[in-house]
Image 1 (cartoon, rainbow, N blue to C red):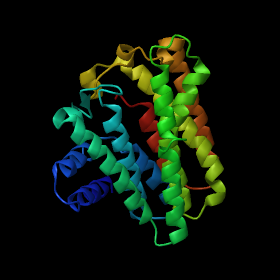
Image 2: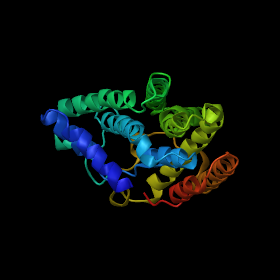
Image 3: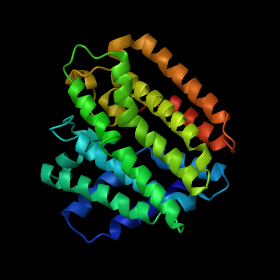
Image 4: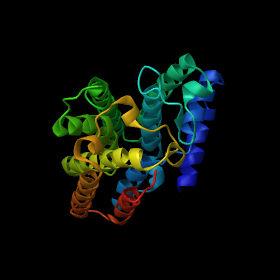
Length: 280
């Protein structure tokens, strides 16, 4: 099924009028990403009895938004990274101007897909609004500016770091869960899914902080580490051992919360297990 989704993403890229920007969009979107967010959306949709294919448009929108955020995050004005997903970042493969435009293109194309995410116009509108909320100035972008503000700061607290991750990472983990519920007509469950998404994003980010100091750039497939940028992380604030304990506890809380949901959670738990034991 994921191969089918990869082919779907490729088709979406090939539908665009060919240009250097469309090449850069496809280069970044079709890199060897984990596709966690689409997988989460499919798991919720299938858990409620829908087909994964029913979520392809919404999942494609999420993956485009996620990829745009990575392109811009890697730029010299942000994290200034040279490698992502095992190969050169977009601005290194092309140039900064093309990378900026490729990110812009993916962001706007994400909304085109979201608008066509359901034959039910009410559901499609809800998907669009969720995408805007997750990726906008009160979501992922808020987390990014808070992250930039925290650079070189010696006074970042654990609670402030959690807030950064809640917005920067958690919003795009929450969105696929919520979108899956929307497509399945399970709006009453959305508050619980928001809590699960926040926990999942926090666990993922703590783990990223740990991997950043325990794995090489080659193993991670991207430039390491946040320490080079003097960023506060769970490891710098807690130490490696306590950060690992915190990660394990948040994963436990996430797993417990998922098991309380009224749907088939088998695939969702399997994804969470794979996340917890990932090596990159």
